[in-house]
Image (cartoon, rainbow, N blue to C red; front, side, top):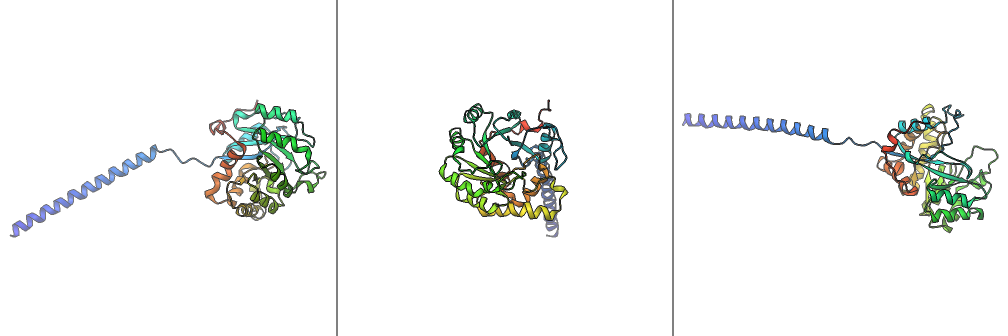
Length: 316
């Protein structure tokens, strides 16, 4: 009996050893397999950013606030640093001749005067050289609902392009702020329900009015550029939080719709990378894709190919 018990015990011990060895081998194999599978998986892509407010009038001069050259080379350098894959470039008048950078994911937005040149605007929209219309409220001394702008709104509806309004603060002592109040856009949005309207700068400092107009009207969107200008990395965290992060967070919370707000910098006035970092702090991470990319694609009807932005052509 003792011999039999010892034999059975020995067999069990051997069986346990075999199972343990097999388990370890299987675990090692599984671990190796997982490592191989992991190495084959594509790396998680970084956030793709569309800058909904830039300017591409490359003068070559130094920008007075930041001291950087206003050149195409500097423009795309800041794109790469910030992870920008596309942008909207705002011109100042119908007579401007901005560079055609459509092959690098830059959409031009035609700036219009107090008496818009409708045939010239239509030619630009029809040809695709322009993908939106820009109205400089405040700089131009008439309200958004002025009858002079009606031809522009009709063309925007015809060609399915958005109208962007400068609103809020201006950098000219000759501008008249009463015309730049974002509340006046409510009337235009109601009268033109088939046109998409964008309130640039979120009407800053009248952010509450801008947020309400966007909240109320399904065809109105917000773009949060230039709450501060310059390089935000050179400013105190308190200042950036007070004048950028908290106001943007309040706006995002008030409208209760993550599809309403878009990122914009107002380059060259503002350093793109430092502004992206501040903007991110205002928006819940789960809505970054919407605010930094998807909303602009939808509002501006963009067709973005990130590969075109990874290594832009050198400036001529």
